Amino acid sequence: MNNHFIIMQQKKIKKYLPAILFLLLFASSIKAQEQNKFKQKTDFQFTAGLNRGINMGASLVLHELSTEFPFDIRFGVGYTWLNPGSSADARRIFINNATNGVPEEKGHSIDARIDFLKPMTLMGNTSSYWFIGPRYSKFRGNFKYVGGNEDFDVTSPQFGFGGGFESHYKISDGLKLIIIGGLDYYLPAKLQGHDTSYYPDNDNVNARTNNETDTNFRYKDADKAVDQPKFMPRFLVGIQLDL
Image (cartoon, rainbow, N blue to C red; front, top):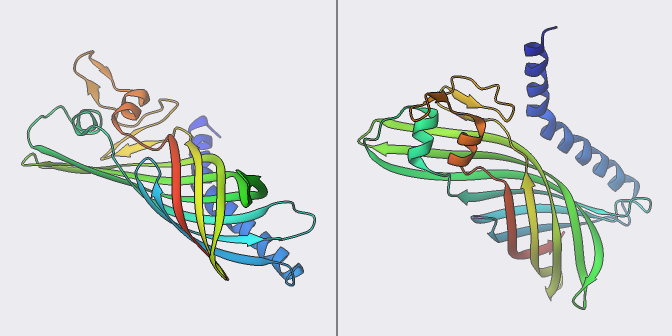
């Protein structure tokens, strides 16, 4: 097998790895739940706040899965509205060097996360946790040039990891206020827009030419132009419902 075939297979595996990981962990949690059905407790969380942009999310928390497993597990999804980057630079790097039209841009990311939570006491609050876990994000930035006949998306699928702390405050039976602070980090990944793709290893497809240097743009240029998730500080407030 040649190197190109191996690289393509690795990219396919990376594409489906998040779904496989989520299915395996969810299946193991269901099995543990069945084995410990008299002890296991489930909570639902809804949060909103800042995650570099405005974020809304929902999570399912499984407690006391096993006496042999010291963590609770949280499966969560979130949606964040983001500034996608520089319209002018994105156009040059993914389309062409035209400058006509009025630029408009918008962006968002959809993330899936797994957290392993461990109880702790934080600032005197015994209903607190620290957590850590893997992340996966699908980023999309849209760049439109009104009057310039250009409207295209730049997308990026990314793996990452993160952690943080949270505290719970009882509102009533079965209802709690939650405050979460943390930081996520996402690894560099392929940036694709129009018919052009830039890869971290610079095995790029249809890279555009930089007229200033008469050389092709590289991944670092695309990454600088398009503000895909990297460091994502999180400050969220929400509610928790005991199911």
